[in-house]
Length: 425
Image (cartoon, rainbow, N blue to C red; front, side, top):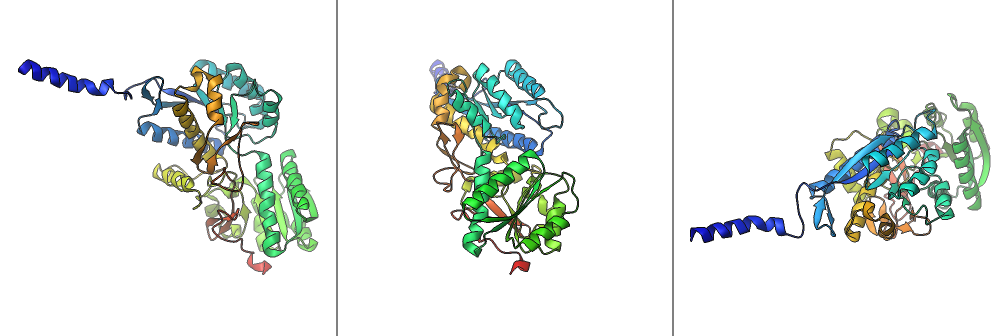
């Protein structure tokens, strides 16, 4: 009898080890994150990836059907330094190459910060056949490269916005003023650099296509610390919308003077610093009524119509992470980890086992993320951004009011109408 009881006891102990899912110290699925940690959005992006990994690992990891086990995620990083002034592209490439060859990640997320470095990285992705969910660089050039040889570059996916999405949505946000207030006169102030002039030209072209008249276009030199002369021109031009684009440290002077001079325009400001949750603490009421657009919806501030954005920001607070200095595309880094989790669970194997076959599982992605429904355009490997979060991901524009970023565009997710600055009424 005692022998029989001992046998039964031992059999019971063995049951957990013969189940389909083995929970134990399994070999981790390695995610590589090569980017420039000099840049604030890259630092925050790393925290977002770590947060997603912790959430998944807390549930036992990712179930890999072919292996019959749940495997935890592990993050390895490399500093490409491509966001630092003067760092050559080749140095960034060497950092990515070293990460791939030495750490042997199963997939890459986020990827290099600088567009030129990301463009050059495309050949490394193809060479090593490594599934990559890139979430920072916005240049359309990446789609051109992919479409030039889809078979070679099929391992690359852009799991975030691109500059065309951004420019189009900025223009549509400003054009909504034409419907709401019958505004149709535009004045542009652009930092005199290639990227800022390109953004300004794109907005100008789009708005003129909507029926707007450009009544002024003023390039300003990097380092400009008095914008009153150009703002006076805007005031005298009859403009109703002022579009300001740049990234120089002195740009806050522009919106402070816009308010103190009571320039009779709305202000759409394309300046990363003012999309930060920290901006109000720095600039206070000078930001009142300023329109901003921090790329993917929900990345800078939660949106009620995007439930995952509320979860994302609540978890960020629970982790006691610092407020983001630059929130653009940070939520995309978080979503990228879940895109991979979803694809691995559907595929039943990890990307590195058969990257050619795994591509189709990323292409078939269909899940809800911070910015809405995540799907990819198979012809471009670009995440789809449109105006309905139930059908695709979206970009959201906000208006600063009394210390809060209020979603105001698109209408489907807006929580309030745009308000005119008091001196315009």
